[in-house]
Length: 514
Image 1: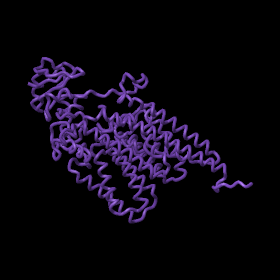
Image 2: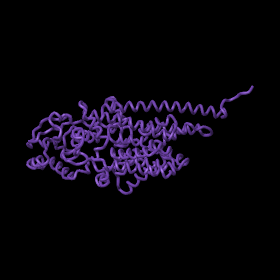
Image 3: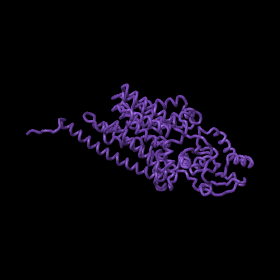
Image 4: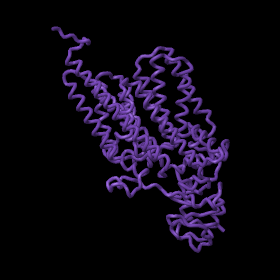
């Protein structure tokens, strides 16, 4: 009796391949299920739109573009200055906000949905250029969200799950999503030697990304350079078309009327570096799990020194290291250029190991599966505080509640009295939130490179709330800046000639200026 096999592979190897296929299918199903749960969590977060950080700045930007799309002025103070926050994306949101019945915060929720969709589809497209494995995009997305560290870094442009829960409506999320689509498009253009129209479109997209969020634009640029270098030798025609695309992108940056992009190079250093020095602190706690991805880059580099993720990581690490060595800590915003390729490599190496057969293949599959699963579980646990934005705080276990960051209370309680365009004297968190509702503050709640009298405004605000400042001096400050209202939580202005109009939920008082 003769036994025949339909496959030319030995029976043992054929069985191993079938087992590998079953394992791959189960892994893909599990990854898709987890991704689905994460996306449901993000949608519920968007409904709540927790307010911590820069949300007030972006809401104020939409407010100005909503009321005056052609000449919005400064988004925070009553001054006619440009602002790098007036990007093509925010201009579109400002136009949408002019639709009757849409509040600025509803528009920001729509922006969050668009940004999240762009990020997810961008990761999916880009990973497809790196691997044909069906589980690769879902695993890569989980790596991007969860492979960080045991201490979440909450910063725009850093798409960890907890960070993304707070910044999903920011322009940085939109720009990063565009960046993934940009890399996928660029990879395809290099592989098929695309025509002039494609390259000119890529150049325009590059310029738009830089305008929408400058730091994410740097990450997009590093990734694009890595993609070109990894492609190897290119013909003269390709280089000509690539150069034409770069010129188109530079023209887009130059003609944008709302701010001078190239003037931002003068903003580096000083206060900007001081703010970003924190990015270089506690690297193991914040990025320790990314070491799995760094380890995954090693076999990729051995197989191909021009591997796009290897080149991407090397360039990103070089920029970040140069920022540390030179004291330009704002260059730390390029950290995603080193983190993203490592996170993707961890996922791709795992799916590559799943397909391994033969001697050692079983142990390789088990090892990478266990390492990646363990790292993802630990990363998810570290960012479990994001659950607090959709689950009542009292229902959270104590260990999760400790990781939860309580959102700020808003200043909607001042809107029955304070109108759009009124000037409010406020400091601290109040100055970062009040412009979101339409008023201005005397000093900007965020650093403003284009505001020439920023230092004086800050000094005036500090003096106004000083305990020893005479009422007559305060009246002069109010006249100088057209102040109509004052928000204060200290109670030190009682009996200073100001009239209490309302009190907020956190004990703050709204005063009417005489």
